[in-house]
Image (cartoon, rainbow, N blue to C red; front, side, top):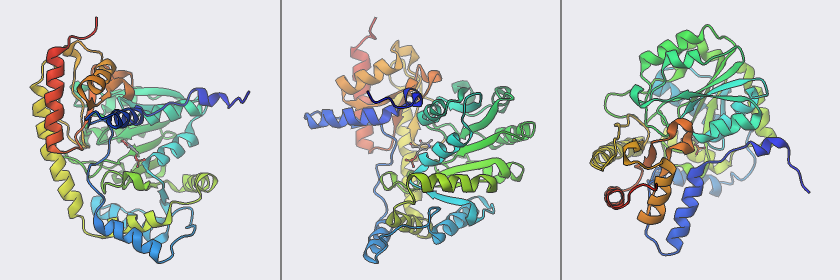
Length: 394
Ligand code: PLP
């Protein structure tokens, strides 16, 4: 009998991957599925980025790189953060990692232990809670409420901090809700955190370049008073349509940087060298593909929201960022996961039930609008037909 340590009975999963596997299986069986489940851009990585990786391979970049990433890439990340936010970041505090997820893994491992509270958004990216439980810490959900436009409430967030809290996880623009926390609210949150100097902050800003209308992303890097305890999570996956390249970066406070670098050395050594050269081309090359993609998401966002609000029992708030709609489906009478399951199996539309993002996700489903306009129209028509034809199970 092979017994892994008890922590593995607590580790969670990301149901979006299970839905993707099921949708692919149904397609293999000949079903035509519209996939609004998985959260990745439907765009290809821009050709100049792909070429940079090909060139790196042709030039013989086949070996290990420094564990923290190649120096030009860390410098390019620092320059990019300066260009985007006007903030000074030392390249020596930038760590290149294989995907955005790795930063949350490292940060939660650094602070999570029995007796520790870690605050995280709910509904939110499922790996936060999974990793908190794996580490043996107590997960404390910060409710992301529709009536608060799915933004963080500084007051409610601060009220959840205890003497045991060691880490607070923030995410704006947010998955799965598309919420964007306004600057004034982040100002209030940061001001309140002054009373909790021992609490580290992990700010997941992977959708930072995807906001719409007049909603602006406010980076936590802009607050010098918390820079000594701020971990920034960002990366290439969403902005540059590079989810499969596995490339992300983090910015660490000086005292934590070496611990993060050692975790890298102890698990994956360094990020794939060619991917790092691709990431360099992405940051230093033209940004028009990013702008075009975000403009297209913006147009689709309006189509999705209008279409959802025309469906019986469905109420969709307008997302302010990322590429997800998170409609309230409570008035359909369906439980969210049952509806998502039936939509996939019977209507051929992949979505994710809100409870896959936490207990506060009941009553909602997530639809990724990173899919073509015809596919979005097809999905909306199918969901409408399904809701009109099927009463919820008793
Ligand atoms: N953070 C959030 C909020 C996400 O939605 C995702 C991916 O869906 C990630 C992090 C992880 O990104 P990556 O694919 O780069 O690991």
